[in-house]
Length: 101
Image 1 (cartoon, rainbow, N blue to C red):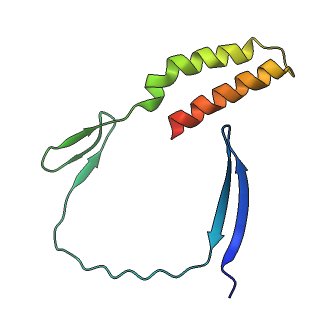
Image 2: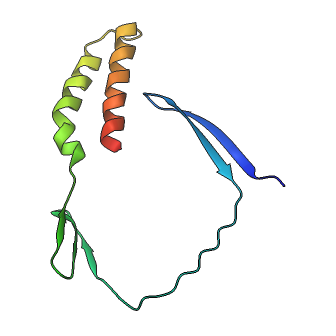
Image 3: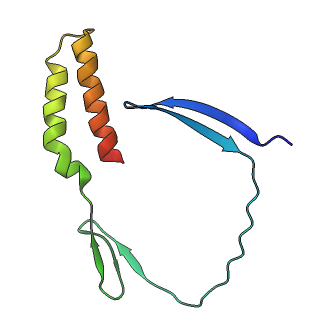
């Protein structure tokens, strides 16, 4: 019985990850509750439901723009091909990774 279909090694700016794709069957029985809810997704709030409960939109990129700008400037001032440029690029990539997570 062959279960693993594909294995990938992915390098992010901070660490290596292993992605495994396996063949598995999953059977979940779902019973409908009969309840419905309406959600509205927007720019001002992440979502709001029909009871007017709102969840604020997380603005990770907006909060980190100053640090990203500073790190990008440091990369642009380094000499191409130098080790210090590689270090600056790695710092910038780690910051982008933190924002995306």
